[in-house]
Length: 279
View 1 (cartoon, rainbow, N blue to C red):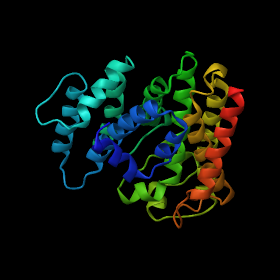
View 2 (view 1 turned 120 degrees about the vertical axis):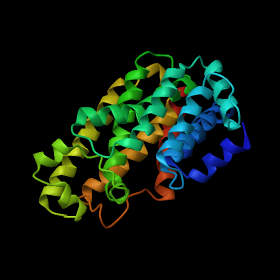
View 3 (view 1 turned 135 degrees about the horizontal axis):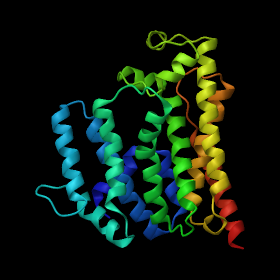
View 4 (view 1 turned 135 degrees about the vertical axis):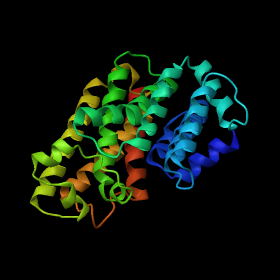
């Protein structure tokens, strides 16, 4: 594993990176490389010093690098190609992840949930579909698990990051949902916190909860051990979602996250289940 991949993961301080503790050394190294790839292409889109055309060129370069060496490519690129060969990954699935972050270059509003669902699938479910291959998931139903868990995690992110996304002129809440609760984009821009906003957030939270439930139902019994890192993610994000619900979604005035102790506690709980299943 390159120093670049390790440094990207270390610097991210992400919940996903934290879940890697559940993996053996080889899979932890490989998933760290894949996670670094996801971070790098996401950072391309968020780079304020680059214009849209240059961002597009960098994403196109990554698309090409998935399949063959490119001039001046990142040291991460050959490691990604190694993973593609090692786990028989379809480059098209990694293309989907690039296409997801690429949507942020030109789309800042979503008319319907079906439009948003495509975005969530690309930036989260596709990540899950690649991850379960690296985790060693064998049951075909693991794909259903990964898709639903990805949708649940991304919807939780969208709820949690409403205010932060707004500062970047991005609104991921579907326009049809705003209309359903008579809560306009102007209300959102003005940070109107009232019963309409709470009802809107409860609606989105219920959608996320439904995806969490569908993921739990699809979790393959024979792959529970392989998917312990994913289950850690499920536990952490579900806890964040429930905390926002209990606090009535005070998203304009505070950020929601778990403390380090709370995260460690949830990791320990999932690892305990893992070792029980091994007996």
